[in-house]
Image 1 (spheres, helix red, strand yellow):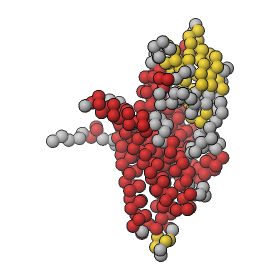
Image 2 (image 1 turned 120 degrees about the vertical axis):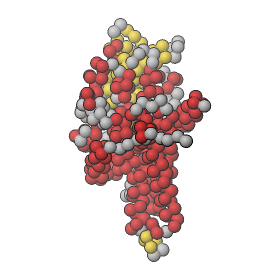
Image 3 (image 1 turned 90 degrees about the horizontal axis):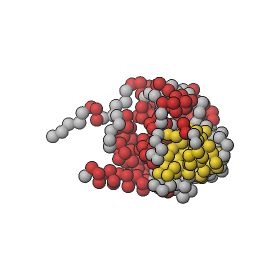
Image 4 (image 1 turned 135 degrees about the vertical axis):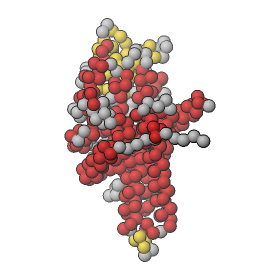
Length: 386
């Protein structure tokens, strides 16, 4: 018989609970009232971004030495979850803070960290992560963007696609082939104001409409060798090492969407009268709500477990972060569909938030690695450990 030590369990200390309560209050009082307008206008919510910066929420991904909170992955994803309950587009602001900075924090050098991370922690800068291409989505090794060394500079040419924060990012982490013969890539910091950087057109999307998604192009863009992140030719390792952690953001967003949909459906079911009694007293509705809450609670437990593994650099993190992302996103889709069903016709109109939540939920099954890719990661991890 074996026992589980306390070090194997996640814990939420009081300071995290206090910060969670602050984020929850901001989300409910400031962000939720804006969520519908953000979705309808499709405009980037600068006011929400400033709100998050002023309250140190954008500092969550960073160590204290760079002006961050130093509170780790679990606290970060708890905050993403709370914001996503109110507005998935606004939650993505915080998610991209990590995605666009982790390559530098984890693989960059001291000069790069000191130059860039404090600007992000303060909220002055916004990052972007430019990996996907029109012909290289789930297969980053197929990328066509190139970077050629020219003295102390690199010349970058290529087209990216599906890039979050296009038009608002102060820099991109760009992945490019630096050794075609051996199919090796490298990662670079590319400031958005450099000549040859074109942010491209923005996509018209099903959901998360308040977060700009574009197709930036890079034409003879010159960056100094000092902007190379990590070792030359190790770009794929940088990308995969980043996504192993940041896919937890998609899981947290999914859990938040699920819980937000449940909370609204429960509130509606308590007030809506059908057959002479509140909907919530009808067995068919009770069954739906019970399943929705159970699935979401299970997704949250898996997410928090994976976050605790990230905070202690557990070697099994890759499999658990994939499982958390897979289960939470599938749950968000299923729960949001059922929440719409609880409201019936009212759930189908945009006067109510559930149709937005259902649309927003779909992307969690796609970005940060599609769920099909997550299943491959999980299965391969199982094969290695068997």
